[in-house]
Amino acid sequence: MAEPSPTLHKSLWRTARGERCTLDRCGGACCVNGIWVDLRHVQRILDAAVHVRPLMAPAYADEEDRWFGDETLETADFPSGIGLPTAVGPRADGSGRQGCVFVRADHKCALHMASDALSLPWPGLKPFDCATYPILRSDGMVQVDDESARHHPEGDCQQGGPTQRRIRDVFAQEIALCLPPDAAIPDKPQ
Image (cartoon, rainbow, N blue to C red; front, side):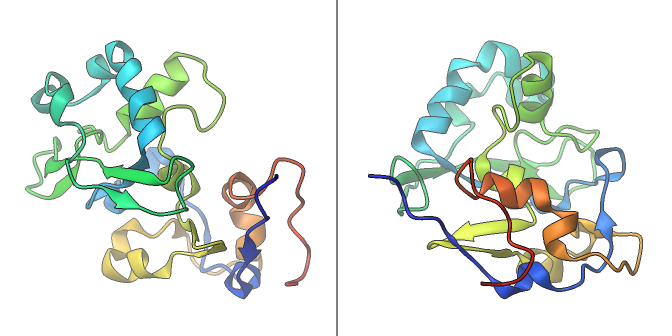
């Protein structure tokens, strides 16, 4: 039986604060606390470790057995029903800030870089919630993650000032990842 389509929260139709940031300007502020990753996806990352390791900060590259924490999160939000957190440690950029072990000194994600190098289709090895940020799918609801931007304003993916475009248009790619492959994003809230 097919999984039911998630509900689209009305926040997706409000006007965005700005356009999508670009990776060349990204400071990876959203990566400060790491991310929960589906158990099957963790295994997929570990299976690709030979490709990921050279793209990581040297302090973490050889620590494959410590890339993920021991704590588990059981939720239907993960296809396997179980999530593991990415490990967090001092950022490779020398800023003294904490961050996910996959964040490099240039603020790019080693999993994203490995996916590109392997020509994997999006999102590749990148964890689901990282690929959809700042869109969040939780408990069957797809919505804008406003909390992260509130706590880490430098991590706000809506940059450049006012726009007339809606969240659903600025982040259409991220919202589409949260929906079944043949689903369209409606023009108006349902």
